[in-house]
Image 1 (cartoon, rainbow, N blue to C red):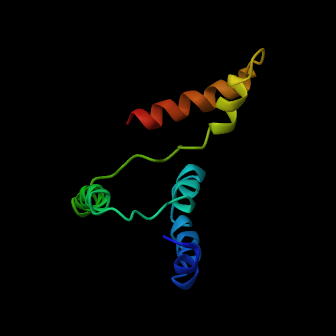
Image 2: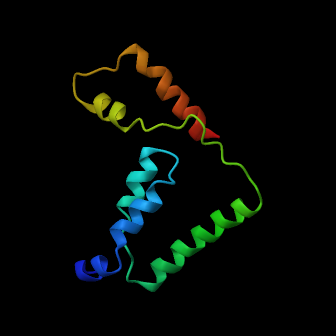
Image 3: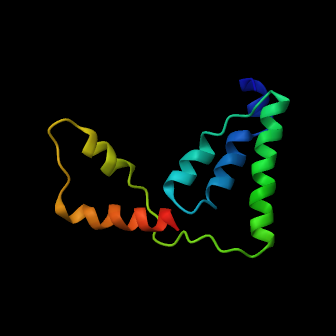
Length: 102
């Protein structure tokens, strides 16, 4: 999608509004970076994912997102050569892993 079309359709404003409904900062960042697909096959693939999510929602299946937090900064810090994470952050990482595994 070209910049003019994006502006006319107010896509950035729409994505900002949608991002406020995300469960965590990772979700908000993901929504704000959504690129619109010009290819029909890609659009169909995305719709199949949306249909699956819609059926989960309609079946009242609860997705356990409580306790999910963005640990990207912690992981980035851990990747730095010669660095280590403080003992206090490990429970946050453990909590994230437990919630993500549900």
